[in-house]
Image 1 (cartoon, rainbow, N blue to C red):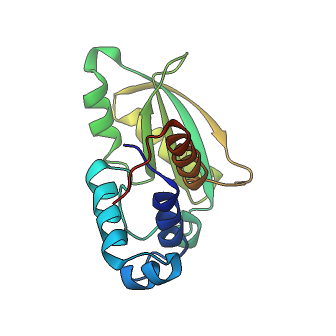
Image 2: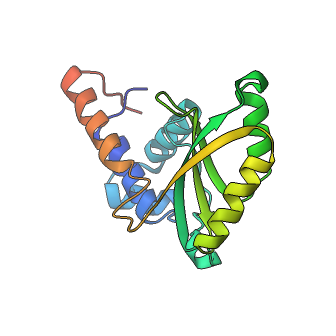
Length: 166
C-alpha cells in the first residue's frame, strides 16, 4: 500500500501514545478527525497497521535472558508440524523459517542461562528438532523499529507520486 507523510505522522503519533484519541490526533496534526480516522481504517485494512495491543516486556516478567536459536529440524515432519510443536513452548516468542545452514530461527526468553538450557532441551524433546545453536543477546540497542521504514516508504511514495490522500 502506498503511504504518504501524513500517514507516517499519524502512525508516529499513535506509536508514541497508543491511547491518544482520534480527535486529539487530528488537532495535533491540524487535519479533520474524519481524515485521521479514514487513514487509520485504510492502514488497518491493508495491514500497514498490524495491531494495537500492549507490548509486554519479558524482563519485567523475570525473563532476563533473550537468545536466538538456530534450529535444524526433522525434514520428514515438515515445517508446519515442527512449528506446531514449538508453539507449545511458551518461552519461544518468534519462529522464522530461514535460508542458510539452519532451518528455523527462534527467539527465546529465559529466566537465566540454565533456564535457557531447559528451554532448548524442551525444543529437542519435541522430537522435531535435531540440533540447536544459540546466541545470547548481551545488549539490545533497539528492536521493533518500524517508524523509520514507514517514513522511508512514505517519502518514496511522495517522490514516486504514489502517495494517497484520504
